[in-house]
Length: 308
Image (cartoon, rainbow, N blue to C red):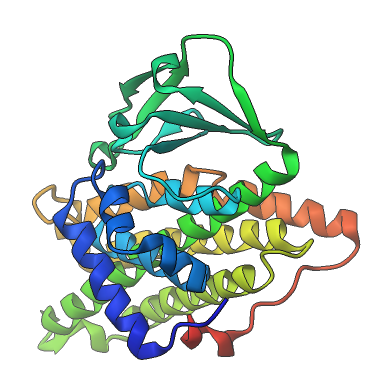
């Protein structure tokens, strides 16, 4: 596997963003494959999946990027017609499916499209397009045991972490722009010490989450891989929680209005956080694992953040 350099990564980022902006959720997987997705993940899977996920987070796209990440994590060939079911839910665009991969802690089961009933979940963030998936016929094929499922779940958690990191980046960027333009008492509110501290806390949290995700990718194929994936998703969920609190707070009353739209970032991140384990439950699980093993997982290297 070779590594993509910074100039190539910028070109890839713009190309992936173009696909996310141009195509609907059901069309994104086939569009990515047409653009050379299979070759890209063969060259540098970490950069490919991280970049795609972050761009989906920044654009608040409903594209099923999690499906592609899980397929790769399970060692399966990327295709446009396989849809992953996690926690009883399928992502937007599932109407394209010829098969559904049912992901559990015990393994991966495959069901044909005619054996699965899909109902729009609606709820907290209808724009994400989540669908409730129910098996309506018995009989399925097992294509992965618990070990394969653990690798697939870890891959999904890394992708979801990057998606939340992209969302937090955008929340922070928009908030910094707002506090530079909004004035009180003749001064930009961004000059107030309390506001600076709130934004600094969000910036530190998202930097830590990105460092943890980089580390999780570096050691994805080791025994620490699943634990590191839990850690990076927990930190990304925490970063989103802080951004939702602090960025919301410094926006003031306008953030409570439907017209402003900041609530959409809060809704999206909360749902992403709850897929494959929310940050609070994953933090507890990491803690239990550390106690049981008698040693901590690998520490994220902040110097590696710029390389991802």
